[in-house]
Image (cartoon, rainbow, N blue to C red; front, top):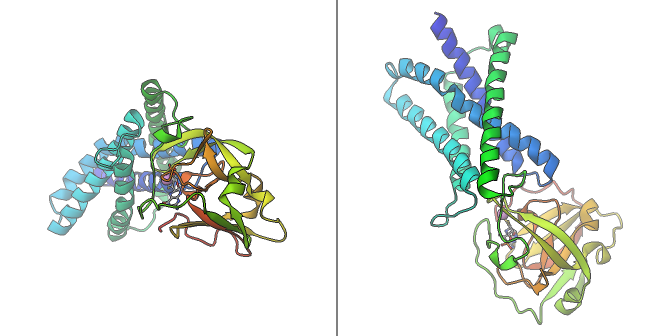
Length: 333
Ligand SMILES: Nc1nc2c(c(=O)[nH]1)N[C@H]1C(S)=C(S)[C@@H](COP(=O)(O)O)O[C@H]1N2
Ligand SMILES: [Mo]
């Protein structure tokens, strides 16, 4: 019986670690500022690598269960194992080798894809095999044991992080690798769901800001300069000197709750009104006009926010009475 109980303990610990890894992974994409991003990255790495440390115990459980498993369960089990392995391998390879797409796919994309695919399968697997929560599951000894794997995972993550730093130089706390700082032409052109780069005429381009048409000429004559880092959830970041007009000069702050920024492609983000002081409608990066790929004629610069907030090809900016969080957390457009 002791080995059965050990199996149960392993399963419970593994479930918590996997859910923690997936949860922190999702939260990581919503965070753009460094102290918070660092804490989340460590928690994510600790949970994920803690899973690896549990493999010797889980393999005993699996070997025992495989003998009496139905074919369906066996397939689900193998799939779960493969996805978990892909998630860990993808994350590790990405940390060590950086942003290097192979046929358009990065190790980070494999990591995220496998992690997201894991969630429904894992939930179904755990639900089918659910058991009543027992006192021992939340006993001090058991929680300490799980915490031990988290500490071990954190130590492994520390080693991975230091190795990544030695191999790649600067890595941001979000886990993103530096590509093209000070040299916008080297930055990757990134779209969530590629709707293609629109060819817009810079000379005649106008942006509707709070109902008023502002010409490209007026915006590109702006002298507000912001040094800020664009940090794509795809795993790269770049620091540039952006130039244009600060949004607060154009949108009166009177009783608005949020600001809608809409692209010529239909892509849009809604930002909290308190951001108005830091937002920039940029026409230039590193002294040169923005290329079409990087959002020219006009793009939004949103310091401290992940790249998906930096709306390209801005066509319309509007004050809104809706709260900013009334939108999909990530753009699915
Ligand atoms: N209109 C529009 N703006 C967009 C996107 C998009 O798909 N469409 N992608 C966002 C994402 S995910 C990132 S990381 C940055 C990338 O900017 P870049 O292509 O100039 O590097 O633009 C953001 N702005
Ligand atoms: Mo992105």
